[in-house]
Length: 388
Image (cartoon, helix red, strand yellow):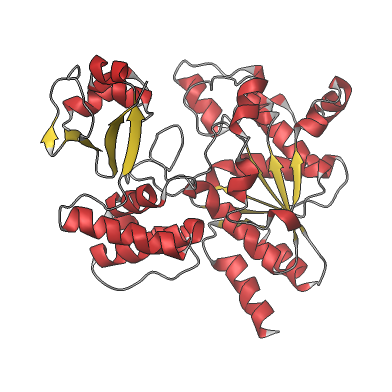
């Protein structure tokens, strides 16, 4: 009994910014009824990152208490793009792009929740069906209610536009709650208006209204903006153990306690920031890659950055002679270290690319077999020329 009470307290209090309606949720949790807990995620990019794990970890807590986790993959809504907090219209994605992005979503989500015990739904299942159903849903909301959104008002006041498509996003997400009969919905604080829309549309269809729980938006590795795929300041669950550990070690000291509370189930540790980040890095790598990988990542980091050595398990990149002769820029793009020539040149100009310990200054400098390349603080690889 005490264990159940402790878990309920954890669900209600740890890492939660706001609960609507809190008393209603506590009553539901103590009722003994199996609740349906909804969390939706749009596959706008292929990676699930630590920011997404904040509600996913909360979803897992509900699972541990015996409730049904309902994970909605927004394959339909991803094609529109969530306008929440956006200063400009999002670029719509094609169905093909969304399918590519969500290829490994369940595998990544399964690192946090028990996917086998969850109910996984794709919202194209109902949104693709008929215009008639959708038109019925739109009766639940007035145009004035939609346009009162602060993010829309800011955009209009600054001379920007809000498309009809964007204005429909919250209605579509709200209807998801009707279709899965959600008792509770989880999301980041920037999702509050969308989550409230779920309550409004359930009310229209004469269903019990879901309670909602919002979690704070956690800053990314830059320490300034929220962790986001759009800003490139995220730590992906599929990052290698070495990269994940290195990124954790690079975050500002002010984020250490936040990362412990919201990204792990561990409590913040006392000690100097370096030691705390070492423990945080170990904890997170262990969660997503296992004990052995966590110890190895820590060992490599200490060896490389404290003792200025090259890690033992340095990767080898097989690269064709033609690419090596075309220079450093082309090489970095070819192996995927940089996404474009301009990004590769920027890394070189910033002194972030070193070969055998020497900073590269010429983007067109040719490379050769056996050289050890370091990009940024975390990426090491040894060049091996491909045999034709």
